[in-house]
Image (tube, rainbow, N blue to C red; front, side):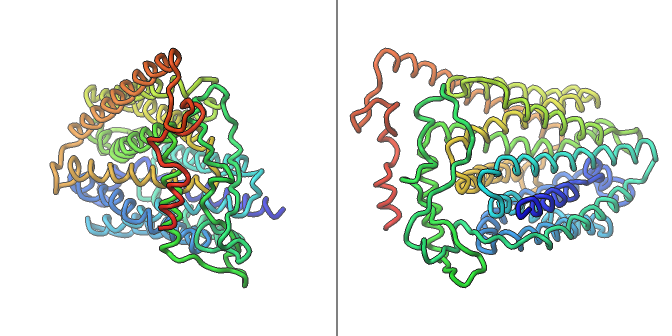
Length: 488
């Protein structure tokens, strides 16, 4: 029962915080009579603030989440959602909407507290199951919110203003749940019990099954006790607590970073994660602006809610079904990423060039479902050899790189301080961006196949006197070298 109670509260919070009927109609609402903003103000001046705030807040929030032991940051996220949608209902003007985007950026940056909290209160044997519950309930909340919004608009002819009110009520209900969560008694970096200070505590295995057909190079034992660098643990609020300083925590993170990214397979999937997530954020953030240009909501009936619902559910089914597909990702991973990146590029290109609303809707569904499918595979491939404690680090680094790339893309392409391109030209740039990703992984896949053929004829010798399948190549730092970096 001690695990059921927080799990239920987390699911309640996840459902209501993602129940947002106003989300599919946000651009139409901002450009409609309620806010009376222009396309340039919405696309080029307001929406970019979310990207900048998300990037700026991600790393400080990551540290604060661990230092404050999760629950206070989860409450901050809930409060940020309430402030965001209260401003959406009441505030007027460009500056107010920019502050709204800042608070929404804070809410998305603190999302790490939601999933980190799971691992602090649940037994390690239940990690996978509880994570599945929480991720599924957030997708369900998003789908129900989008569907409810569309039905209210299409069937009940509800003004878009009241969708914002309903979203605010949902966020307010979600705000109640985190207050009743128990305070976690574990912390990864800042708080260590005296019994473990100066020692090492073994990471828990992620529990993800390994594919026997994978490359030996993908089996770098990043969940091994021998190379575990994080001195986890202790009680966040207990009397026997001692705290690591910020410098010590940063050193631990740096050492873990070097160790994790010495794995070639992890690097390959992480590169795709960062590159594709950057493009995904841009397409999803500005798709409504494109649809509004193709079919203005003031003149025609729009079906954004149905599209968001279908794309979310189809993406969830695709993510669920990938677990039953048996593919040697070590052999075909790069080429598969190339092919699906081509699909995503084609979908974005069709949205830009055909300029028919039904083609735009269909292409968007294909785009989101493809991304959700691939990001699930990437998550599994990265997590298969990571301990739970290293998930936050690796996924946080990948997200940070994605946001950094997105910020550059936003400044150059979207923001008025850069080129400030119109929405159709922006989507042409995004289609070209995914085409470049496809070319990169095509070349990587072909190189890997050629390398495999050459290794099959003559096993590659490494500096440590073994074949590459027997140890980590000397092109990457050894454990001893990393430990020396930590001591200095």
